[in-house]
Image (cartoon, rainbow, N blue to C red; front, side, top):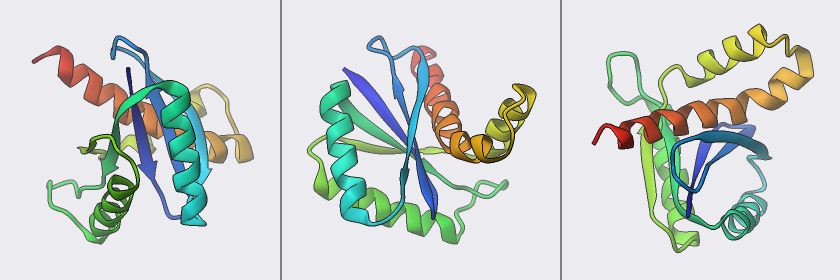
Length: 138
């Protein structure tokens, strides 16, 4: 069973998935953030296709650790997803994942439209890898 990670944005939702051993995160795709019924349909399909046991959603936090307005939006999104799927939902600190994803893609010479398309799924993979790394230290 795998973990699916979501990097929620206003336009796109980045998606990443773990391997079966829950050691390595892999960017998967991005889903347009609206219409919401299409988001849920795609998530259900990915859950089935990848045999997902739980979903990890990036929780935006300020640099001081506090929660800002974006966190409220993600909490609402997580609640709606939780109501729509029958697997556990967990949030995880996503501070700087988009910045790291942009740097990574820049170093890989990914430019323009391709970078915009890949940054969300790369951020989701960084988020998931952070979570997976924390599991191995427990």
